[in-house]
Length: 264
Ligand code: BJW
Image 1 (spheres, rainbow, N blue to C red):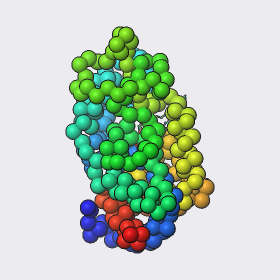
Image 2: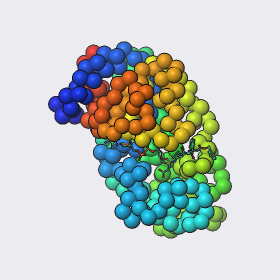
Image 3: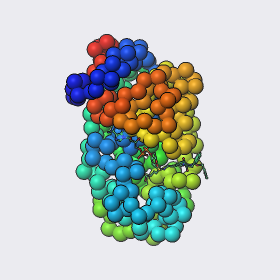
Image 4: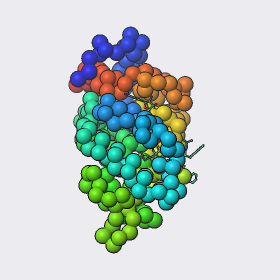
C-alpha cells in the first residue's frame, strides 16, 4: 500500500477535503486512461509512439486506413505492445479501484469503471463489469466484421504479421481506431453510468480523445462531484472539483484507505 507521506503537501490537503465527500458517495463512476497503467510498466498511448515508432504518425498506426495500407507494420506495433503487456501486472492503483468497488457493493452502492485502456489490467485486478470503450488488445476479429465476432488470440509473440483466421482471412486487433465508431451499446452504457453517478473520477487520461473524453464532463453536468488524478494538467482540470496532481498508483490507494477508515 502506498504511503500517504509520499504525497505532496498540496495533495494531502486535497485528500483531507475529498475523503469525507468520497466516503458518502454510493454511486461512483471511474474513467481511466493509459496513465493508470504507467506504473505497471506499460507506456502511455503517446509514449508508445517513441523510439522506433516515433517516425510513424499515430493515425497511421491506429486507423483503418493505416491498417489497410500496411497491416504487417501495424501488427508489428501491436505485437510489440502485447509482448510488453504480457509481462505487466496491475499496480496499487488498479487494486484500489477493485477494493473500492467491493466496499461499495457491501454498502448497497455501486462503482462503474469505464476504461479507454486495452491492456486487461483492470480485469486482472478483479474489477467486475468492466466497460472497455476502446476494445481489448488480446482480442482479434476478421477485417470488416463487427465487434461481436471478436475472439481471444493469446499467442505472444505472434507467428505471423498479420495473423490469419482459419479461413485465411486477415485478422485485425479488436480495438477502436481513430475515425471508427465505438460500440454503441458499450458507449451508451458508459454514458448511463456517468449520468447516474454522484462522484466521478477521471484518472490518467489526457482527456483529448472523443467521444470517451466527454464522459467526466457529462457526469459533472448531471450533478456528480468531479475528481481528476493525473500528474499533469489536462483539458479537464479546470472543470474538476478536486485535483490530485499525483501518479494514480500513489493517490488511489491513499484515497481508498481514507474512505475505508470512514466506511469500515
Ligand atoms: C499518469 C501517469 C500516472 C502518466 N498516473 N496519470 C472532436 C473534435 C476533433 C476530433 C474528434 C472529435 N470527436 C471525435 C474526433 C476524432 C477522434 C478524436 O478524438 N481525435 C482527437 C485526437 C481530437 N475520435 C475518434 O476518431 C473516435 N471515433 C469517433 O469519434 O467516431 C465517430 C467518427 C467516425 C468517423 C469520422 C469521425 C468521427 C475513436 C477514438 C478511438 C481512440 N483509439 C485509441 C487507440 C486504441 C487502440 C490502441 O491503444 O492502440 O485509443 S487512440 C488512444 O487515445 C487510445 C487511448 O485509449 C486514447 C486516449 O489516450 P489516453 O488514455 O488519454 O492516453 P495518453 O497517452 O494520451 O495520456 C496519458 C495520460 O496519463 C497523460 O495525461 C499523462 O499525464 C497521464 N499519466 N503517467 C496517472 N503514473
